[in-house]
Image (cartoon, rainbow, N blue to C red; front, side, top):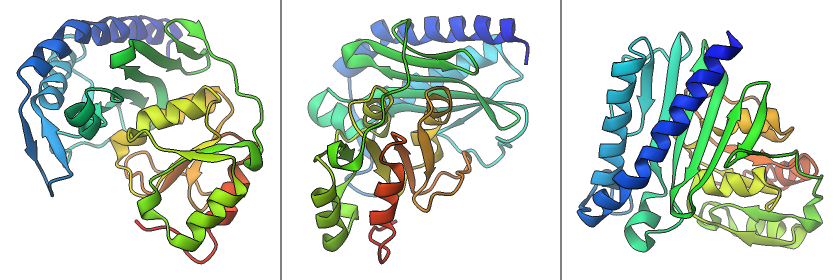
Length: 263
């Protein structure tokens, strides 16, 4: 792909993301919430409006681009071919509703199945993480560097403990330094990207939950695989881990003992 096109597109997307600085407070002031599959699966007018606004932006400026996103049907999207945007308009909706904290916007751009641009916008703290293929990763424009190796015994691990059986949970606690969970796949992943956490794993993410992480992992020499150490299909997702290379194999070894997690 033409590098200048990618650089120009990145600039446009970052400008669009910063328009949310005015949009989100207005939406939160009028926030209304509904449920999808159960009472824990929430959606708000914030999620829906942000996604609608990005779809409108694409239609106006990049009509050849397609959108694969959480709050819409994606049945007619062939994400592996052409220009595809993957979007979670609000990752951590429960946190938005209950705390108005610890949520983010996830956005990733793929061309013929290759990750080209990625964004995780921690709106409450105004921290924009972005990555450009072959040009690195950044936080608010400042270049990020590959985290130093973290061994399992020194690693903070991030995961939903309710999805891990008791024996595996104890093994993870014993082998690692500590455990944390933010409740937003994007923000838990950011802690790995910046070297604060050793690993984050999720047993049942959707494609939009992990779309941005592929490029961050590539640009920062992190490990991102299935929980069996295999390559991930960005259009299907499934159990995944993003990890510091120093503890990746050790975490997987614990998880693979006797099917220690639920999907």
